[in-house]
Length: 67
Figure 1 (cartoon, helix red, strand yellow):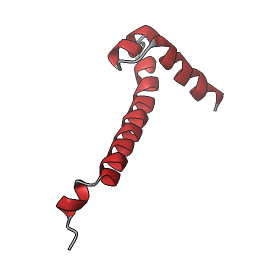
Figure 2 (spheres, rainbow, N blue to C red; figure 1 turned 120 degrees about the vertical axis):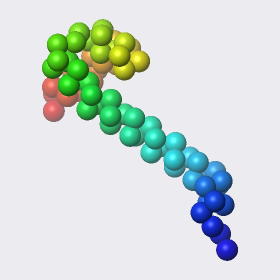
Figure 3 (cartoon, helix red, strand yellow; figure 1 turned 135 degrees about the vertical axis):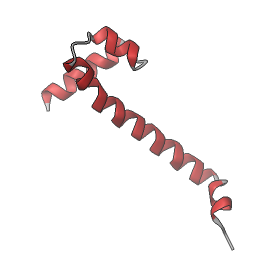
Figure 4 (spheres, rainbow, N blue to C red; figure 1 turned 60 degrees about the vertical axis):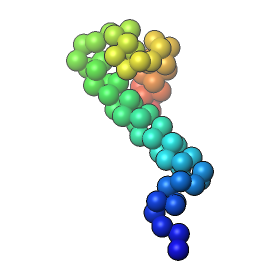
């Protein structure tokens, strides 16, 4: 029988786990970004706090304001 521990060792499981991890990380960043800006942090400060480039932060801000 194929148990959970065997499933966790498969390449498919590991790939899906990484994809989900990246998606969750991205979603958390997207939620945190406007909150940090609303607190008065500059784009540069937000970028440093979230370990992103200034360009990445500006791109997200632009995308969120155009929605």
